[in-house]
Image 1 (cartoon, rainbow, N blue to C red):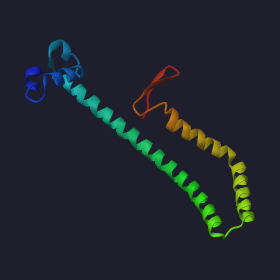
Image 2: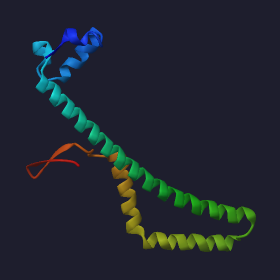
Image 3: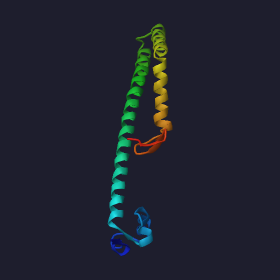
Length: 143
């Protein structure tokens, strides 16, 4: 067993009373059993693992969003550059804008889906890795 007196060498009394609820049965008995400590270590490992996966998924989504935003900003910078340098007249800019509108109508459904996906991932964010959910009466864990 690990008792409160054993922990007094490393922690203050307030810290000990803060960590004791993390272990099964430690509050009632005043000591931490080997099985409770093992279960706590396993739970902590899985929580860290799920957090690492979640952060990795979020990082990947942010990288894709960064690529999309970089492409849009690049097109805007090129158009402004052509206007400022006098290389393009308003007729050329109007032609470019009409082509972009044509692309917008052509890929309208894809643009709508991309926007909805961005809102879903970054605003709603309904599930994280490690979350438990029930679908049609079957309990599942998000991986």
